[in-house]
Image (cartoon, rainbow, N blue to C red; front, side):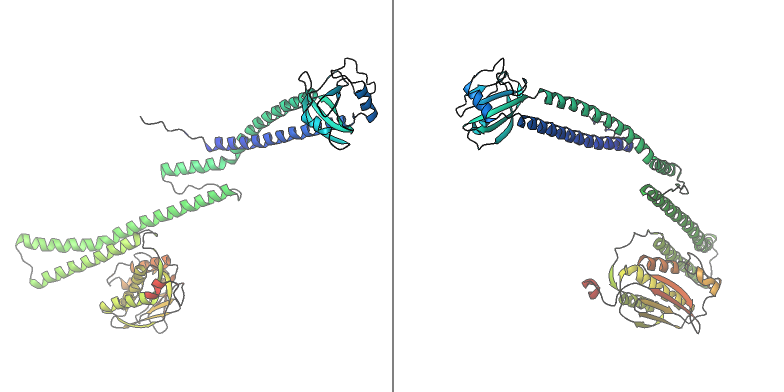
Length: 465
């Protein structure tokens, strides 16, 4: 049988209980400390009063001469302590002479005091013959005997008991007041959290990422609200970019798919009607279909590259950027590009595949706009430049070159999807770098990538690479 899930207390209830428990502990410690200090003070005063009641040696000698081992109903010591005190002389063997209406049990401390130096005093709790608790002072003021003076502890115990009751009442009232105060404080302190919770629930139910939480003050709740607003803003931006990517992808995919469908329909119609196309026209149709398939495959690959998340890539490691650029140049040359290189050493932290594709895209782009011309690739202290000698780009179009699916009006007749430079910008940004395009002096375009790094590697893997 499945056990029922125990419902946890709310944050407000836990906070109230925590405040009440903290106050209860503080009040309890304070009450115990207060009780102990009062007890010590009253005990000290009682000991002081016993010290003031010490008889003189002559009075002790008189008690010994008129010795009575039992309590006396009428004390003969006229100038002795009041009747509620107990007074007796103790001998080393434990015998006693009682000079009061109350006798006390002879303790080992009293016997020890008979052998102590003169003016020795020792205070301890003892009992009277009838079992009454007593505060006792054993003193040596006469050779070979000790004097026991005692007073009942009922007044001290009664006072401490009343004080304990009073402190317990005060502590209980303090805990109740603390619980009430904690409830009020938690309700006030958690009100912003309640608003934040309502906003989160609203977004969860409506998917309205435009919801904002009012931010007041600069405390932890305010910072939490700011972080939440920043998170929803980021999510809204990501959702909008995703929608834009889907819309742009649908628009860009429509053209090659339409051409493919048209060409395939022509081929099928010629086969179904029996009117064969001449070999030249058929070859042109098949070449066009192949080209459209190649363009479609490249477009899908670019879309997958752009659609992946920022963390959906291999871990960044230290690598030799000059080797990455050299590999991109080699791939571009296999595609027919003429490339002149001037590469210096530079080590960066990034993803080799993404950075190689970024450099390759720049070289392909440069080769496309300067057919037959030479592309110049240079690397010096973290700055990669790729220059062509083509017609260049109008200045008003330069801010748009890294936008997805954007293509210059003069380049719309050339192959491509308009995603190459967007992929470059994404790959460079992931590695912490920057990229931009400028018109080069004397004509053409110079693309610049600036990457943070070092002239020498820090890891053995980068050295080997």
